[in-house]
Image (cartoon, one colour):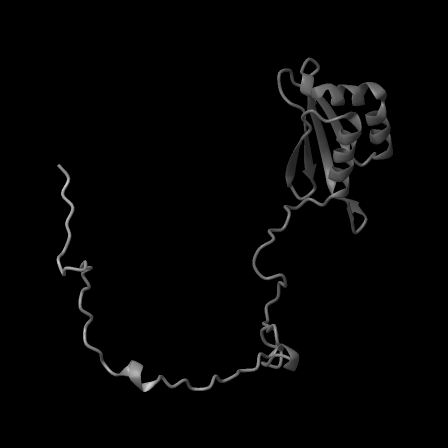
Length: 168
C-alpha cells in the first residue's frame, strides 16, 4: 500500500521446506519463475527466500513502521501463495481494528440523542390493539348459596342389606 507516495512494505522473507509436503505450492511457485517476475516489478521490496527443512511455509512481512506480520502458507497452491504475497504488499503496516463497542469513534456524544425504534413514542394506529371490555357476569343465586355436604352413597339391594363378596 502506498501512503503519501511511500510503499509501506519493506522486507519480505519467504520460508519453505524443499522436502515437506505442505510446501509443494511454494516449490512450484519458485520453479515457475512467477516470484522472480514479482520481485522485478516491485523493486522497492527486499525479497528473501529462505529454505528451512521440516517446517511449514510462511511469509514474514516487515513494514516501515516496524510492524511484522507472519502469514502461514501451509498446503496452498502457487496462485494462492502469490495472492497472499500481493495482499501483504497492498496492506498497510498496522493491526486490524477490533470490531466491538460503538461503531462511531468520536470524542463527542450525538447531539440528536439515542436512537429509539419508534421516534414519536407511539405506535401507528393500525398496529394499536383496541382494548375491549367484557360484560360483567353475574352468578345465579342458587349457586352462590352454601349447600349441605353430600352424604356418601352406598348401594343396597332390595332387602336393604349390603352385599360383600368373600373369596376363599
